[in-house]
Image 1 (tube, rainbow, N blue to C red):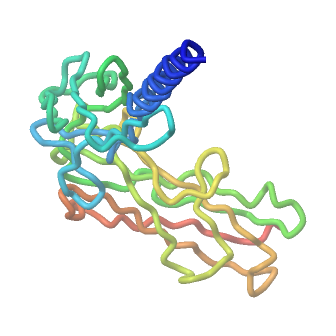
Image 2 (image 1 turned 180 degrees about the vertical axis):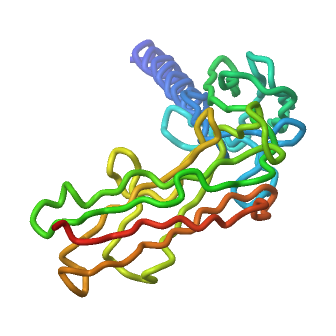
Length: 253
């Protein structure tokens, strides 16, 4: 009986030790989440900023095997490409040269890593109208006809120049007239509601208007939808902005 009791005690110690090992594993890092960067691009000679103009640092969250956040996890940052410098501890990103393709911003926690892409662009100084005016010949029966082409703006470094386009930069659009009306939606090229666009390699951004013709005050109404396009740098509206864009509407004859 004494031998059996001793064996059971030893088994008990082994079992307790196994449980402790499992608990310890739950405190180890299983995965990390690298949040989207605050802006699609960083300006050459400046740090990455958010839409308000404030300097923005990358954010990484580490999770243990139980799905809980590990607040003490040590994160390190670097880039695998030229075009930016990255502080390894804070993650501060600074643009140093324009490049054709985005850079990879990489975050590591122990053996685990994740990456985000970031474009490097010229400082935006001025915005101009691109396609300033468009039109819709609307139909009350065929709603596929009630969609404009894109009205657009162009962002430039300086005032003019073929090589001065500011790419990968956010531009916001807002319908200002008719104010508060539900007759018109801003949409992207896929037809999804969207009031923000990112400039392409030519510095152009735009949005289309989808008209809800059945909500018009008259089935023969001739009118205009007025849109303001705005872009900011360090919290200030660019020179030339907001840009006034117009979509004229008239019934299909």
